[in-house]
Image 1 (tube, rainbow, N blue to C red):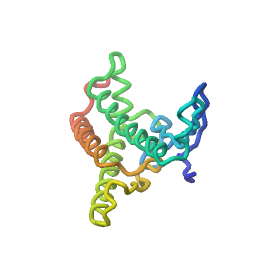
Image 2: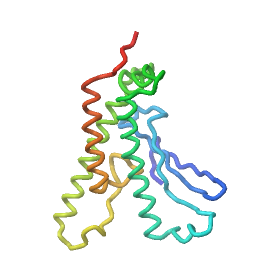
Image 3: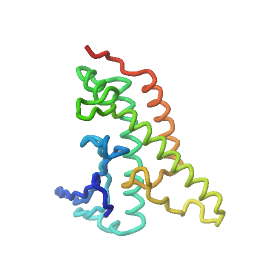
Length: 187
C-alpha cells in the first residue's frame, strides 16, 4: 500500500464480484487537491462467479487488470476533452467553472483542465523515457518487460506504447481547448 495522504484503498462487494480499488488523487500537488480529481483503479479482484476465479494471482489476471486501468486513465482524459468540446446541455457553466476558471475556494484554485494537461504531459514524458530505455537495453526481452510504476500517477504503471499514442492525441486536443478557453462566458 502506498503511503500517500491522497491515496485510499476501498473494498466493494457485488453479487458476483468483490474487488479492492485504489482511489488515488489525480491532482499534481496537495494544494490543488479536490475530492473530484480522483481516479479509481483496480488493485485486486476476487471473483465469485464460476470461471473467473482461475485468474486470481495469475500473470494473465494481473495483466488484464493493469490494461484495464491504463484504458480507464486514457478514456477519462478523452471524456474531459469531449465534455469541454461539447458541454452537456444545461451544464455549460458548470463545465466552465470546473475545468477552466476553477471552483470557488480559499485559496483560489485554477480550473482542473490545466492540471490534467500537465499530468498527461508528465505521464507521456515518463512513459516515453521508459520505452526508450527499454529499447536501449537490447536484452532481447522485447514486449515481455513489465512497465514500472508511474511516479506521476502512483496507482498506474507507465503507459504502453499504444496507450501513449492515444493519450498523445487526446492531449493535443486538451491543449487546444486550453488555448481556446471556455465556450460559455460567465455573467
